[in-house]
Length: 172
Image 1 (cartoon, rainbow, N blue to C red):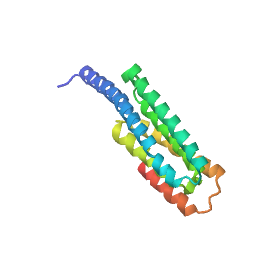
Image 2: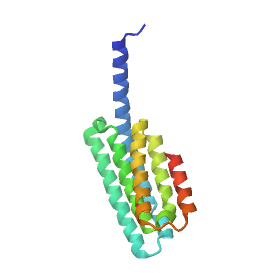
Image 3: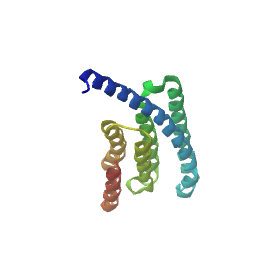
């Protein structure tokens, strides 16, 4: 029969391992996101309606990649002490960049809303997030997309907004 003290030690050791793994996988997610951010420039070229907007979006992407690189360096400095916060940082940084692009490319009608699904699935697969961390991070990303649209965008085609949001919420 196991002792309660032994089970507590085992749980604590497991929690330490999960936090360390979350930080390690968060750094990996940041590296993957950097490559994807820069790789999506070709898609931006096809979708951006003007050269000025294309350049602006590339600035967003470069700044995002730089912030993600800072996250990778933070992992090298602090390691497992970063825990789940690195995944949160990655999600919010990339989510903010996606929201900026959505704002410039048509608001609720922009196909770039699917970029949020890449964040949800990518972080959800790579980083062993607890349900509360997952819901917190993804909830903040989703709300930072939906609330400004509801407050400031005029939704002429509610079916598009509802369909996009149904897919986003289902992916969370």
